[in-house]
Length: 484
Image (cartoon, rainbow, N blue to C red; front, top):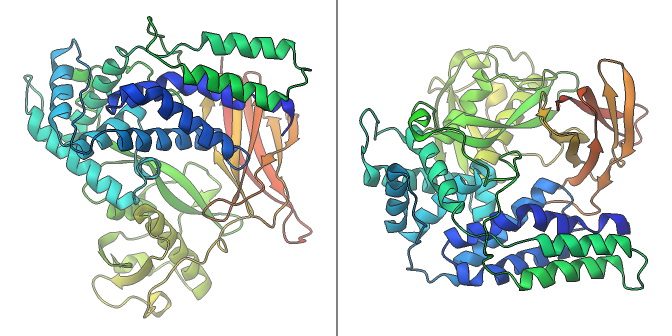
């Protein structure tokens, strides 16, 4: 890694330090905050060459902080959340403090960080299914505790409560004094002025980061958090009032749904925010029939019928579809694409790589192409394209000129070349090789990322690779917009 890129850890601490510290305090481990954050950063530093996606680096820190805080807090000790001036928020915080630690912990992590679905499951080190069940149970318990404190509220609606919890936790977090980072910033500036020191840049920067973290304590001031996206700055001000939030339905965020490429018939994953229900799996599969993909280059193979029911027994999932759902498929190749789309979606929602899926048609046997005695299973990365752009999603608007493009590439493919074209002028404004991990993640992909600075405008972002000695390159594109 070039020397001028070695300050990523310092920058990440500058951005995430206050959030991580406040999270540790909310989780009841304030006295160990410095050690916990230091340990998380050290662990990330050891894996920095493999974790190059900025989002994954943040998730890695969040996961370690949550579990280190959990480890140092006595098992039976309940959370003691700060007080809030607003009566409704104080009632919610008091109720959370009185709940069993496991239920309170998952609510605090999910709603303070605004992470749900697979992302939350990863941070909590749980299956997606188990994590969603625990969160829904905890929210229902909280609902029963806080009741109906204000005229016109509906205590039986989880949707009205979820946003109130987020607002209450962020309000409480703002009362927690955050550790200062000015010393770190000044030392990094000094390092930049003496970049040719005989001491290696990596060593000096890491030493500065750790020296500051080792001295973490409660500063005498509260640092107001700079405005940014909620995904990267969970401590941002909640914009909705408690009263207004009652009409906003709760959502399960980042639910993985697979769609089919119109041009190549390969599987592409979109992470979508779905309404919270008591049956995430059934709801997710139903959306394969009803929810159009964000990317117009994708489509769903399931374009007729609906889901009648799902039944999971062990690692075997039985999906009962209406008979009309099977009508569009005229040959085994078409049927296999549809089967893979449903199997991969169900497998990721449940967090079960070994899931096997059997089909029914209105409770009876489906067409022969959809019959398997042992059930249909995943086939590794075979149905996937050589390259994905995972972030940003198609149609994303950036309010900053700094844009990070990230994705996945099959191990046998070349390093992606990312080309950015201004749509209005049809001119290429950037073309660069992506920074790509040398190792593979748990799914078998190599991860890549590119950081760009773009002027205001609309852009076509395209990642291109060569693969398997083919004469034609493979590519995927997303349309984005940068505003100022």
